[in-house]
Length: 162
Image (cartoon, rainbow, N blue to C red):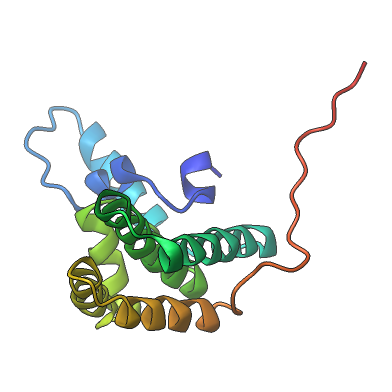
């Protein structure tokens, strides 16, 4: 299994699976496209507890930053991260592919059809000074994934050997 499949994010794989083949002199392109289609429709490995807990912790931490953010420039980037990470956590909770940019919204639509629109609406309101809706929505996403993570969260780096 490729690292991209384990990470649940492979733009090239999806490009080969869903893109238009313009030229294929020897059939290689068709074989690659067929393999890509098979891989994108195959079951993904289960989301590990560690991955899910890390995503929940990161979102919990951002939500805490958002609660005390007063600088408009900082708020912009915290809101953007809250939106992205909320969408990713929703996808992880559903065990599906992740994506970046427009693909994040496209991956989200089948598993949480109204979430992208709700994130957009509440993020815009938060940037205009009404943070309550975004806080509530992010909390809803967190709760669906098992809730916020603070107590007991710990990750250790690799051990050094002499």
